[in-house]
Image (tube, rainbow, N blue to C red; front, side, top):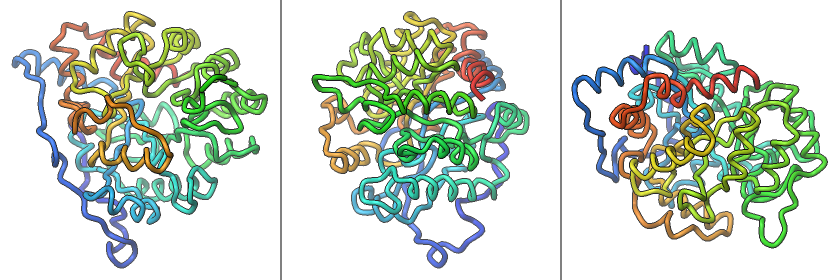
Length: 390
């Protein structure tokens, strides 16, 4: 079906009454706050994009929902309401068949002050799953066949993913409980360390790597069929995960240090270790880059480094004011944002999932990639790895 999506008109929590059953918020229009851009193509190239996006298209990392119009004023009320508003109608304007949706990541504080608690995550995942269950267009993804079904039927398979394992504390069985409510991908750490290993933000003079409990957690995730992401984990933690895991490992959103990303980038050694597991690296955008052209420079660097079979796209974008949101996140976690993050108000050509996922295949076609190469990086590589993991 490609981009011929079957949006059914459903809006978040449409089975309830906004303002009565839950607090309502104001949201911007899809392109508010930035000037949208579409990569120009010839008629023949545009036809080729349509044909190629009839294949499987998977985002390895995005936040496929809306944030409030006034992020700084309303974000904590929105978070504590505990109801993420999936952008169904805007996602239907993309060629996506599946999206690894990272929920509220570092803002996962539905019930707690600092977030990532068990009650926060279970509430967030289960409430989202309830909403997805009422949409005929989007649905919770539990296996590879769900992604294939979404492609065939013009639907969207939403892979509920979590960027940290902090909430499992010292309880391995919680991995299975999360799997049971639909979580299919989980990060080892966020920026801060937890019982599994050292977080990428905690590396100063020492990098403690994966803990003994972390080894057991990796083995349990392998056993139950939970995809493992090393995004945000420290370099040594990632190398340890790659050594321990018997299944392919993902970095769902990464930029290469060797391509000029500096401290926010991932080293060649770590990227090659992930690829050596049979894993896949999703190219990150967020607000770190100025435009789609710079984004694709990182893509090409990764392809040259690890081979095209191990690269996909994980833009890490959302619907709302991403720059203001990162400012809130930085204040909440007591970290300083890199200057590169704040140099521009938006990423030209990649500001939200709709713009990003319409421009990514257009750039690939415009820049001479073969059909086979495009099919791999748009979704084939992710599916191949998931066949083993799930």
